[in-house]
Amino acid sequence: MIPDRIMRKIERCLALSQGANAHEAGIALRQAQRLMAANGLSEQDIAVASVTEHTVAAQAGRTPPRYLDALATLINAAFGTQAVYSVTLDEHSHLIRWLGQWRFLGTDGASQVAAYAYEVLQRQLIRDRKAFQQGLNKRIKRATRIRRGDAYAEAWVMGARESIIPLERSEETVAVLEAYTARRFGGDLKALAPRQRGKLRHHDFTAVREGFAAGRHVQLHSGVEQERREELTHG
Figure (spheres, rainbow, N blue to C red):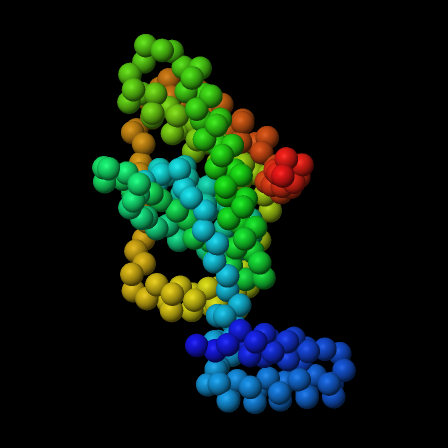
C-alpha cells in the first residue's frame, strides 16, 4: 500500500503540472512521473485514489423501497456521485434483522456532501410520508395504507427532482468511478431490484398528487445548508 504522504506529493505535483508557468509545470510533471514509476503507480491508480466513499444509513432492510432508491438516484444526479446499496446484520437484535445503507462514491469531496444531503432528504421524506398516512381514513386496510404511502413518497421524489439541476459527470469521472467500483467490489455488485408497491387503484392517485406537490417545495441545496446551520446552532 502506498503511503498517504507519497500519494499527496504526487497529487500536488500533478496539480502544479497544470499551472500557467510552462517551465515549473514541466518540472512538476517530471517529478510526479518519477514518483509514480518508483512506486509502481499508473495515472489511473492516482485517479482512483482520489475517490472518496461516505456511508449513510437507509431507512430500509435487505431490499429498499423504490422511493428510497429513487431518492439515491436524485442525489447522484445532483452531485455527480454513484451510490451502492449494501446490508449488514443487526448485531444488537435477537431476531434476524437487516440494516440497509447507501455508500456514496465521488471525487472532489462530492461523496460527503451527497451522503449528508441524502440523510437530510430521507428524514424529510419519511416524515412527510408518515404525516400523509396519519391523515388517511383509520378504517382502510394496512396494505392500502402502505401502498398509498409508497405512492406518495415516490411522487414526492419526482416533485423534488424538478428543483435540481443535474450535474453532468465527465467521461473521465465516469471512468474513474467505474475503475474504483471494479477494484473495491470486484464482481460482487449486482443490479439493485428495489421493493415495488402494489398496483395503483383509482383512489390512490390523490396520494400521487399530494406527494408530487409536497416534493416540489423541496429545495435540495438550501435545505442541506439550513440543516447544517441548525446543527451548528444546537451543537
